[in-house]
Length: 332
Image 1 (cartoon, helix red, strand yellow):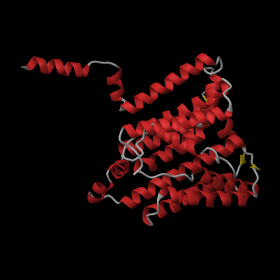
Image 2 (tube, rainbow, N blue to C red):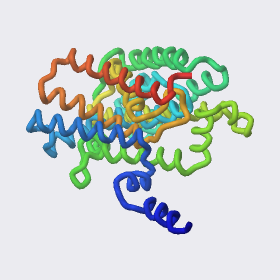
Image 3 (cartoon, one colour):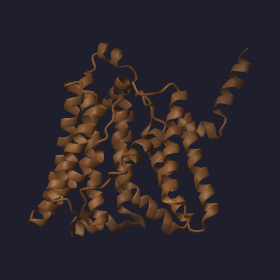
Image 4 (spheres, one colour):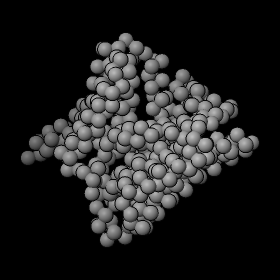
């Protein structure tokens, strides 16, 4: 009777890719999108001789760091079951304020702190309206998106405002061990979010509220505060992404991201998150960001027309939502 048990135990201990992935806490969804990323990379490496060059890889990872940082924050909000469509408007507003203050002689460090504070304040407005006034998050953030964008246009007088400085040069074009500083910032954000979501009580509350708000309420979790902080997190990452944006572009641009809203949402959905909340891992969002980066970069390298690129991205969104629906997801 003991022999079959030993055999079963031995089978469980056998090394292999599934066991390795399990140790890394990789779910089936994560493995699936990782395979999709590998297939995309293989395809573009065969169709373009420039794709797998070190220069190209570093360039597109640097260029996607802004999207990646915001996607990490949106991931937290979407795990709770909320959505934030105002991130790019918050980025535009916070960078406009930062650059205007610097151009008027303010210390760069203080101006950056104020800009991040403005982004967090925008998150407080979003979070309070959704969590405490109980207004639909899509309606709320659509409204604040227009308000924040309007203030950005007002502050900059509807034009790009340039800024220079050693700090911005270091963040925008600096490299450590050959890797862009902005990539380190993005990876640092993902590491922080992973630690919070996987190893802290707050992270467990986030998953609980997203998965079953009724049971969470009965167990004593303050649903309003969890939702509030989820939207503040989303806005805070928009402020940090704004710092990287100004460093890379050298200017505050009030119209930034007007066509890029869906890229952030798509990256999170591609990462295997459930649209109904309660499921998903931030490493999946990072892979989703990389899939979008590879797709965009690869299509440019093989000279796909811009309108076809938009069509392909739209198809990717529909595919991701369809897959989520098969898993039993969907917006609440």
